[in-house]
Image (cartoon, rainbow, N blue to C red; front, top):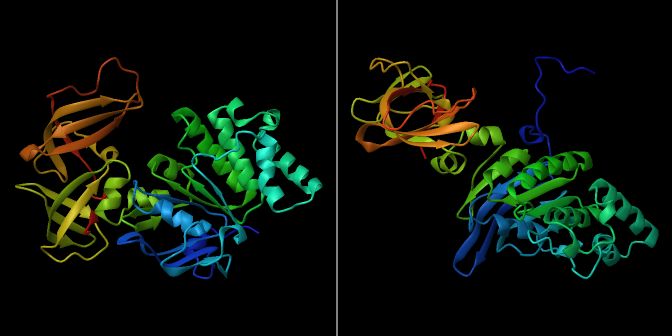
Length: 378
């Protein structure tokens, strides 16, 4: 039956009636005086490809190990498919984990590595053979079945480790930096393959990564972590376009930040005084009392060149090109404005050219729309 045009289908995390598949309730994990995970609550829904994203030491790997049962919470509870697994040992959880190092047995062949976990569960030989064949075909590694790990490439070892993890048909698959050992081109290709595989199997994936691009490419939703806490949980688009705090805005991609105070409010727009003679007009649906300190966040690709500087124009500034980085598909320009501040702008190289669109020390004017960024108070 066709869905009416005026009715939007809710994603599971938007539907108040949907029950989370993984529920983390106020979980804290201490190591001595260090809070590796600090009062974290999180819901993950069935069939999601969910990413825990953050820099080293933010607590994302500890949270993954808590889900796996390799660590136990100091306080709080963890539920998987409605069952409290807080104190359940790892071998009794409906979970499998793929480690960053892949942890393949060097003396075993590919098919023996895949079979290992099935033997531990004492599955009948016939069923083991069927699952091995299924995984070899699914991951396209059947020609490698008799080889040992040292006889295959890094990308092939990654597939074998994934096949071994999936062979046990886990309800939840945990991946710790699954693509970290691959080179850039192979990593990019594998990202799409992993997403397609997850969609075909319908298994809930939770992955840990510090790679923003990897998380943005593969995830249904992302939890950005810092100092053991979750700073924001949302879709990749919302995380990038609508960060809720300064930390997330700076951590995800590049961003220009203008600090100032609210000097006026007009409907859904506010005026921010961001420097001597520099006023920014921005769309904001949140109330901001006059004098409130705010930060305006503008992504470099949202800025555009002006034909000439107009002091009366909205959100227009003048500056001088200080740095240029040519990346092939785009060029990045760092422009020095008043008081020595630098603003970054990105231009797409649509037409082939032998020279940059702009050059060093060139005087330029740039502008952006009031709807091209966000106003942050944290």
